[in-house]
Image (tube, rainbow, N blue to C red):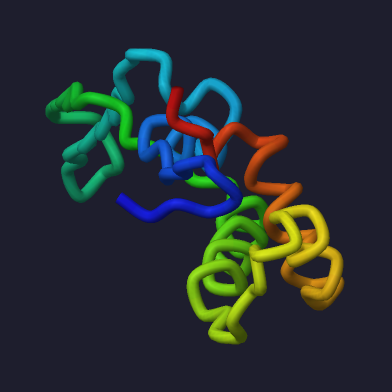
Length: 118
């Protein structure tokens, strides 16, 4: 486990999945595809009509904008490689981090993707 400021943080994968899913995407459902083939003779009279119906489970939809933003936030947090001096306290160490890091950290906390282990 990695400790930061006497706290342990982790990425909640279920919260991440929920955050990037489009509205209604997690609700179970089915998609129905209907195909109709009409056969006609040379005088344009209908000889036969065949209708097929395919039912399959609805696929999961992703909100592309939220996915890109949360991916960027995670990359910012993970790729940050400057040492944060916690000897004067985590708050003081965090105050010297770039704005992008603070914004990414706060965004991930607000979305529930980055959580503090209890």
